Figure 1 (cartoon, one colour):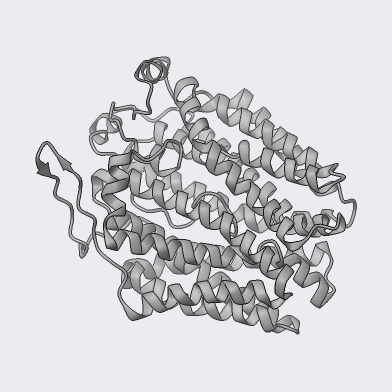
Figure 2 (cartoon, rainbow, N blue to C red):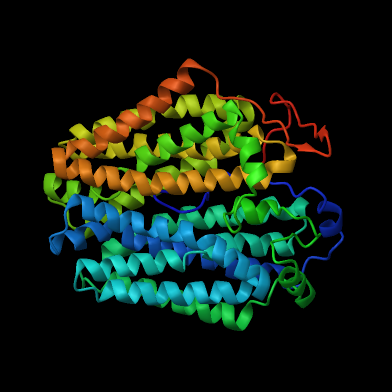
Length: 462
């Protein structure tokens, strides 16, 4: 989904070597469905709030006289704050439990939306977005909670529920914001704050802690994140950005040309998509005379097409043709969509551009996440996904800033053309050469751990 801090689409296969047997023998909690429902609501509300604010933020900032560059800073501030704070919240959730961190995050999000609702300056808008980013560990902590209470063989279903919450949140969020904004500029922020407050109450009264006291004490004594089975690298924790990637693992995967290629492609496609975030609402308002309601519906349309692409098309095609071919197929509509947006002067062309962009985004990014998982050996799954999350976050910082600067310097078409150029560079790479293989595991005790071939017949879980 657009601008979202964590991956919510087609989830890659995540392994926790050495923990499967231990976790598989642990009974699933009796209130498992209730817990999953609350976690689903947590992520859904988080993305609804994000979706409510994202289309409106540039329009509100424009009323305060913000430049395109400043609007880019406002948009990127969320991702920057989240990137910096996610490891902090990860360590705190290990030591004090997932539940209190989820509750703190929901309360923090509610406060940030209240600040947004009553913001009277650009500085107040910036403060609201930084606060939202600081408290924005709800999604990865919810994923870690699911990893705590589910055995590995059932984890894909739980993570898929999180992905569904992503998609639905970004469909409903912009629509709600667009409907409420004409009533009052404060109404969207107040609605987002109310949703977070209700969700916090549900978590306080209905959601138990996922980590036992013994597990939390073990983490305090060890001073580092460990899995419930005692393994030093927790694939979910590292892969969700909740703990820093170990330096040795970072070197092992980044030194591989194949893995580095996928990272570069991830950065280019994500940055290309993000260039439009700070300027598209302004573009729609200036060129088409659209108000907040219409802009909200456009973002909801973008989210709907992207969710259908990720939830239906990718899930059907990826096991049949492979993620590398899927990236190739989706790269062309990605570029074409941005080019059409740059030249759009009628609503049908605008909608076609958004649809093509959503198809391209929905096909490339989830497939690249899965390729990252396939490109690394089982022992480095967590690290590989963690690096991918960080690269995506950096792209969501660079993209809006570049888009805002391009808007100031060259006018309306420039951010879309810049995004098209970045996407075209990535598309040229994937069209000229197949997207790659596997990374070798680091040396351990003088021996190198074997890994699967890149041509394994085992399709990644989606």
